[in-house]
Length: 204
Image 1 (cartoon, helix red, strand yellow):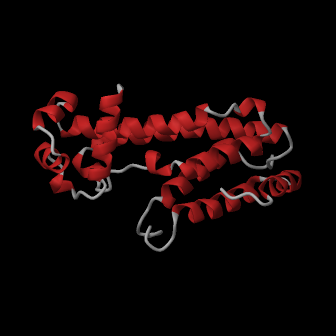
Image 2 (cartoon, helix red, strand yellow):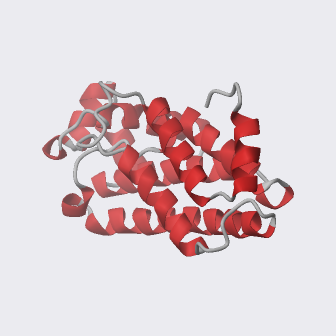
């Protein structure tokens, strides 16, 4: 994605975050961004193409966060803590900005995005958990598959405004609490001691 297209996607995400489903038309977007509608048509083809590209942008941002950490070369807790801190700081760029129900409007696009995101995060967290078990940091009585799914489900839940309204609880606070309870639930005594040393005086 070139710089101009990258900026266009960023601008569109900001606008779309306040849209209802019936408002998603190229004409509305063009008006809000003061663009010629042909710019959007040439760039994305149609509204479904736009939604797919925005979701791809958010997925790539998530993958870039994980790419910055070599899970295999770190203590498992350090690796997961580092990635999770980056997710917390950059969540605006990875959380889906399209807030209306894509299952109804663009079910195939949404399903492709959900499957890709779950598959990617699942593979990373499973690897981290298996590493942590080998290091004696994570509990051996838990399955890597179960732990990865719990992590993913908690990330998804944090973005549910019915549970956690953004105007009353900040994402950073939610993420701190989520990660703390998650890591303590999967760690051995050795792992918890290491984790507590790492986070002493640390702010996500």
